[in-house]
Length: 155
Ligand SMILES: [Zn+2]
Ligand SMILES: [Zn+2]
Ligand SMILES: [Zn+2]
Image (cartoon, rainbow, N blue to C red; front, side, top):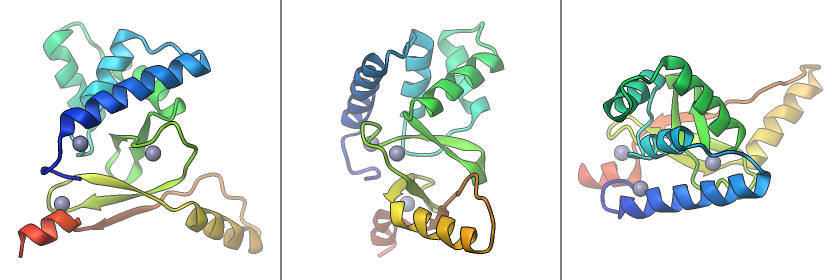
C-alpha cells in the first residue's frame, strides 16, 4: 500500500465514501470537516492534531485548535478516521462503509499505519477479561514493526 500505489485514488475514494456515508446517516460533512479528512488522507502516515492545525492554517489562517478537535470528534464518531492511541494521532479509515474492528499496524520505518481487521481478537480479549470479572470499556490493539514494502526495500 505505501509509496508504489496511486494515492490520488485513495484520497478520492475516501472523500467520495465519506460524502455518501454522511448523506446516508444525515450527518453534515461541512467544508472544514471535509478539508480535515482530506488532510488526514494526505498520506498513510499517522497525523496529529497540531500537524493538522498547521496544514489547515495554510488555507484558513483563522483556524483554531478547537476547529480541529471538533472536526476530529465528528470524523471519529462518523467512523471515517481511527485514533492511533499510542501516538495520539489519526489515520483515515480504509472502509468506513463496513462496521469493523481493526488492529493498527505501525511501520517504524516509513511511519505508515495500516488497518488489519481483527474482530475475533477483540472478541477474544473482551471475553477473557470478562471471565476474570473485568468490565472492558475499550480495547486498543496497535502493533509496531516493519511493513512488507519496507522489508522488500531493505532487501
Ligand atoms: Zn494511498
Ligand atoms: Zn477502519
Ligand atoms: Zn514501511
